[in-house]
Length: 441
Image (cartoon, rainbow, N blue to C red; front, side, top):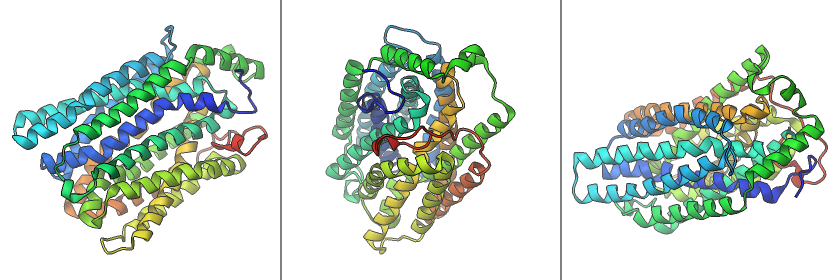
């Protein structure tokens, strides 16, 4: 199946997206369940709980750029990225299934050693996820020519959102968001999530042909003259111009700020929903993910017309407005209003997410996509180091500060994104409605 610069290879991109589905399924479970275990089983306050999750993220802060750059320099029969995806996923599957065992053990007989063991396993688990997160995301640009990368990124995000929805649906079935199940055993729940990740990995390894697809992409890029200047200038060593560097820094600061807001909500909402709203967190988060999936196509069409930067700014406004309105929700608020706000938050986040990573990768060259992927995830993980602790401090003072906190940081992202001048290339004319999926290139 040959590449065509005018039309994205959707089946191929869907297969590449299986790795991201696995990643997002894991993080949806992790963000929802681990805070519940820390606060309910281990009886930690929000600051201590946030500090433990942030300490795990410190490891990823260094691992993501390291393994992204390392995969750039790796050459194996399987390719550059696939060895990391295979090894990291297998290790994560083994480690994640230890968590419910330690949780159950502590619930039966509290012990300081079991608390320490739980925290250590969390750290090792994040190391395993850090091994393959950047390589998995970098695989898409490796096998997709530049003019199609935003379209491909929309498909990758669809796969990730699907992984999140699956986990939220399981949460509804298992009742993980019900107060009556505060001390439930998560053994079966974690096992099913591990099974989903394992099946995704098996299909991925069987059908993704990284070396062949990367070779075809390189040949197509050379034919179109997209990488010729890179080769002439030793692309991997080429430094950004001052204007490009400033734009890169501004984009990365924007990533930090919107993740500061967004991750505070995703990592604390499972506790917040029960404490403030008296609602099952699974339903509202599922609605947010479903709204994101439905919105990807129209977002792609609008991005193709108006460009990445304008769509990101629009998404930031929508997300900040949704969080601001959610600040006033309480247990007696209409359920429909809550659902609408989470749907608009999902749309806002999808608008940001589809366009932000391609803006960073657009500034890379063919030989250092993994490095720039690492930059992107370093920024997002830096936010996730700080925000669980910082938001936890505010929540310990007053629980209703969660959404105002998130609103402030998302608004800051608007002002750092506004001066960006690079990374917003535009696509060739589209042939079909689906060819617009993913935004401007």
